[in-house]
Length: 202
Image (cartoon, rainbow, N blue to C red; front, side, top):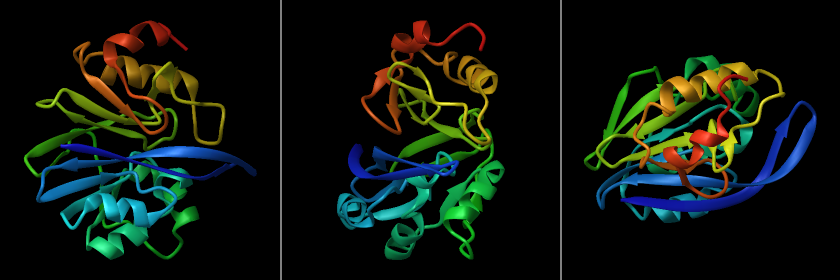
């Protein structure tokens, strides 16, 4: 079971602000779930949870538009917050004085509601960027690593184009073509559809 909640707000980086819509993915079953990327407004996310147990609020990366209500959602649901350690410097800008409850590492497996998500560390958009792969369901939650149309944005602080292309090539393009890619912004896609949108090298 996958539910999508879309929230709107501001992405702030390098002294600039951008209006964005974010996809929040609620993944699990009728009893327990993960919340992937708690962005902008807590109320619609909590409404989407609909009283289910939240096993964790999982951040695909530390940009403010993916974590700015993580603490509020965690407090409301009693869930721990998980993020990759390489993005802690981004987390601390948004949530000073509130540390995450656990750290994600490449190869970790998280289970809720019968769904197992494998953590794929995919740096490039940010140093600690991660995707979450549900092999049994044929789905990957790509955060801002891969979009409908190709790689996520680089050219900002802590981002690197060759690194994101390598991450996608080594960690995502090795998945089956029919794997559904649920992105951090915009429409979903598939691995097969994006093969031609990822350059052989940056």
